[in-house]
Length: 223
Image (tube, rainbow, N blue to C red; front, side, top):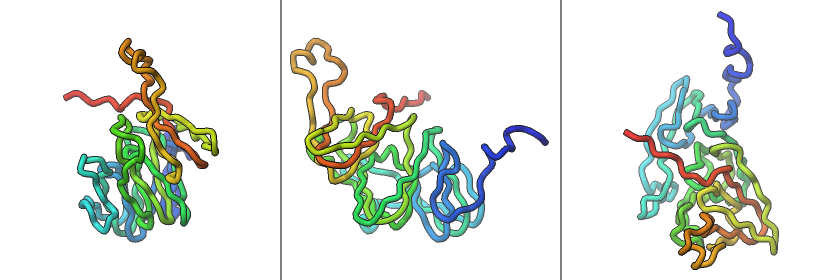
């Protein structure tokens, strides 16, 4: 049987231990023990693997806010290979080193090493914004698999040069940045219908912020 479909661009690559990018829409994890992934994100696997839903509040790893904000996770244990994807979003791998802290919107987390610490924290100064009052903060050392609708934009943040981001577009940022709420239009303008850009998240300090190229929320499927 012959087809471009069977070419190198689409063929699964050789096994490399841990988390890697299989293609622009799919992450691959070679499991030798255990790893953690978003519930329902596994699209294929081979080998001896077991999938188990992770409960809440185990050792502080899966803390969940009383509002219901959080990240539904499953553990994948055993020996084998597993592939992960979600709604054909673009995928990326971030290697977190000791001393790093990365805060990420839970909707953008796909999978990660069990060596990473994970906690739901309040976004200080953000108030009850559309982007969520709580975010997932990752610490420790290991790899984190992220996903994003479209190609993300990474904006450096420098001292004295704050960056303002739409709360529905932000993916994540350096956790040591200071956050606050910023209003970019007057009350009078809002009463007249507004510009559609009333409130943003302000980030101060030194680091970076990741945004997706859309502020639209995912559409709800009917039926």
